[in-house]
Structure formats: C-alpha cells, structure tokens
Amino acid sequence: MTESPTPRPRVLWVDIVRAVSAFGVVFTHVTMNIVYYWDKKPLVRGDEIWWTTGVFYAFLARSALGLFFMISGYLLLPTLADTFTFLKKRLWKLLLPLAFWGTFYYFWRGQVPEEPVKALKFILVSLLAGNVEFHLWFLYAFVGVYLFVPILSIFIRHAKESDIWYYAAIWFLVGPIFTQIFWRTEIYIALAQLGYFSGYTGFFLLGYLLGRRDLDRRWTLASWLLIPLWAAAETFAMRGEVRATKFMDDQWFEVLTVHVAPYTVVWFIALKGLGQRVQARLAERSRAPAVWEAMSRASLGVILVHIFILDIMYKGFGGLHLAPSDFHPALSVPIVSVVCYLISFALVYVIQRIPLAKHIVAS
Image (cartoon, rainbow, N blue to C red; front, side, top):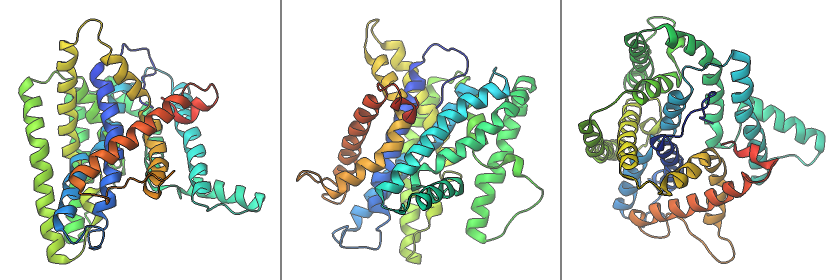
C-alpha cells in the first residue's frame, strides 16, 4: 500500500513505522471496547480507573492511521510514473481489498439478502456509498489522496521546501484548527473555499518533508518523552470534561484534530529516530530487518482482518475467550492487542503466499 512506484532499497525505520502503525490500529480498537462504555459501570466493575486506563491507552495509540498516511507520503511523493500507470497500480491495491473485505464483513454480520439479485445490488450500492465495516473507511480516504498524488508530485518537483511547508501549514489551519474552533464554539469559519487543503493530504506532505529531513537525536529523545506526557494530558482533560458534561465526544479521538494530528507527527519523529538508531547498531547478519519487513508487508492485511479476529476472540472459540473487559485493562488491553495482532499477522502471512488470494491483502 505504501511502496514506491520506483525501486527503493528497504529502510528499516520505514518498516518499523508501518508495522507499529498496524499494531496501533489493533491496539486502538481494543481500547475502544473500554472507552466507549464510559457510562456502563458493569463493564468497568464500577471502577473509574478502568475507564481512565483505557482512555490513556486510546490516546497513546490514536495516531496509528495518521502514521500510515505519513509514511505513504514519504514513499510515494513525488511519483515518477505517469498518471495512468500510477493510478492503475495504486488503486488496484486498494479497490480489490476493499471489495473483498467489504463483502466479507457484510456476510460475517449477516447483512446480505438471501435473494442473489438483491444481494448483489446491496453489496454494490453499499460499497459505493461507503457503508462498510467501520474500520474500512481509511481505504476510501486513500483513494481520494491517491487521485491527488500526481498533481501533488508536479507541485513538489517544482516547489521550494518553504512552499510545501506553507501548504502543510494552511492544511493544519483549515483542518485541525478550524475543526477545533467549530467543535468548541459551533462557529463555522468560511473565509474562502479552502477545499484544496482538506482531508489527509497534509499527512502525506508532512511524511514527505519529515521523512527526508535529518533530525538531531535530541528531536527523537524529546519526542519519546513527549508521547506519554501528551497522552496523559489529553486523558486528564477528557476525563474532566466527561465528568462535567456526562457526555463523551468522539472528537477527542478524530484523526484530523489538534488532539491527534500534531501527536501523529511526534510519533513519526520518534519512530524514525528509533529505527535509524536500531539500524546503525544491528549486527551484519541480524535477522531483525527481515522480521520488520515481513511485519511491514503484512500491515495493510492486519488492519483489514483484525476486526474479524477480535470478534472471534470476544465471542469465544473452542472454550477460549479473551476480551479487554475480562480483567484490568492495564494488562488486558496490551495482552488482547498482542494476541490479536499475532493471529492476524499469521493469517495474512499465509494469505500472502497463496498466488491469487495474496491480492486481497496487498503488501
């Protein structure tokens, strides 16, 4: 999903970012099993610490999909392929998995009509309308960004770096900041038609800019120190608001907000710096790069299948049952996330080695 259209040597930190972002998606969805039941005391055993722990973990990992967009921007911008070649290759890697897994989850949820013609119509209309399993929304977002990549590439090849930073700054103003103002005040700001700066394009550009910049070790250290502090501050603020209003707003976890977008950049810097240091210290024959590469190539597939795996884990199979509400989330969330990730990775790893099936989990 994030390969370059021209051959590149593999870079360890890139594989680390992709693999961690996929795990972060799994981790986020496990935390939400606690977070979205903030007012259901039976789930949290009447202990507010349960819910607060889940919220902290949710903020800690909420940048996962933003990292996917950033690393894609680093790898794809600027594309050297002509527009038709680029779109043919990239859209195929999105649309085929979308069609397959969108349809799979319709059947898994028992939503498909029994009559064949009605079933086909339901599937086609639902896929076109974006009425798919909740975690597949990002595929539609990627399609939109991919359609814009050839134009962005022309801009990048002829622009100064300051011009690209200008675009990213306007994107942050129009997206996260304006959204925050509207969220808090219900004042809609419409100074101009600024649709050119909306969506996830800014993450692509930030990935391109920061991926190519050599950052001092102090940036990496500062980022790793800031990550838990940021998550803790967000947790404290959200907990206070929920206590006061008796309502939990989803905006706290939206990717295109001031809560998550800058935090995504911090994670990107931290993981890039860590990956570079790890690569510099690896022994010549270390197998670590091959492991990270395998995890990286499976990242899209893991995101696609993990909800199916979580469903089975939560419902139980063969007498086994594992869910984040089974015991304290300080331990249950990481354990459930790791188990789900490993099972998802194993499944994707097998699918990738089946000639025809491998296209539904494009690497």
